[in-house]
Length: 153
Image (cartoon, rainbow, N blue to C red; front, side, top):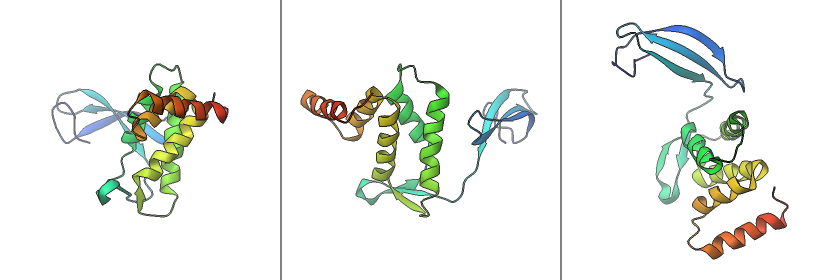
């Protein structure tokens, strides 16, 4: 594994353990050249997945984009990191087990919306405001009203 500090190609694994949700292995490494320590994560990847975005642009599936979106939506909401990791892992598992090598970005967005709706209504509205491109206060009001109507938390 290449060192992120000095770009040396070799590092030594000092410690390995599963993550809390058992979906990956956390490895503490030490660079053999500069001695710097860093962490890597190893995850199972069932197949190469491609996301089809609007306009038919294609890009490789990236778990980190889902993690970032969920983190932004849940920021300062006091939600346990383990629950967020479980949400993201569940979405990734859904995507990987669909049996397709290509998935529409819209389908991933809807999966995130469904997960956030069950987790936290404020995070759900935050994500929806960006995902559905709210342009004025009335959009928030109408969406928040629909969340209330379906019994959002």
